[in-house]
Image 1 (tube, rainbow, N blue to C red):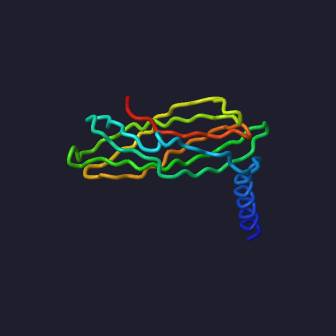
Image 2: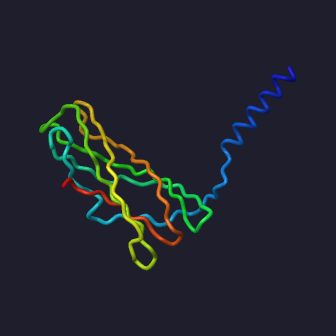
Image 3: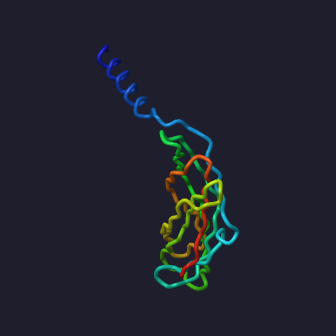
Length: 151
């Protein structure tokens, strides 16, 4: 009986210790999106069918790093819509997401481009995928997020 209790306590202590973090939660830097990058048309990978993609919300959790940086864990909600009359089969679409870190002075510190792929099933007209990514932002700077149309 004592061994079961002791092993249960050790297991609970281990799990609680694994959940502990040295990072300190902090307020997130501002996140903005230009009007032109909120809704775009991209082409599907298989058939070049126009797909409408729009930003559908953002959720961020932030923690202060040891340096003067903030780690932003971002969930970017998207709405992906296609016309089933043009094509209703299985497929996928690459969604270009642009990010820029802008200093308080307005100077662009860094920018990046990532492609998120969303798949859709036959007969599926609308889906709501979530793109997840981390971004390190200097304290006082802001993060700009934009969608980019197909080139």
